[in-house]
Length: 99
Image (cartoon, rainbow, N blue to C red):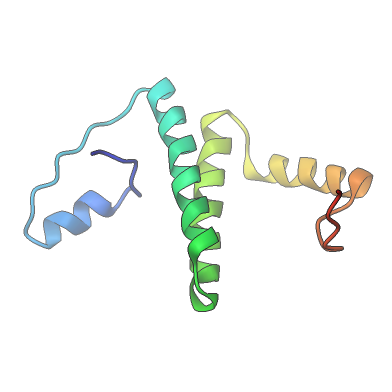
């Protein structure tokens, strides 16, 4: 079972004396793998304990940054779009749940 990993993971595995099998994905497969990774990391965030939440948020954020880059967007541009949506529609701070 393969999965997308951070860039230094193969190096870390080698330092541990093991020999990882690594494939560099093409663009379409990379984008699909990023979405799978986002699902994986989101699940881990959902299941995280209080002390693990910040680390899991960081993992989700790293995947989101990679998704943006893979689609030709700089993170600063994503932040601008998020700010505009927040100004127009609000954020999620009010804990509002629409029935």
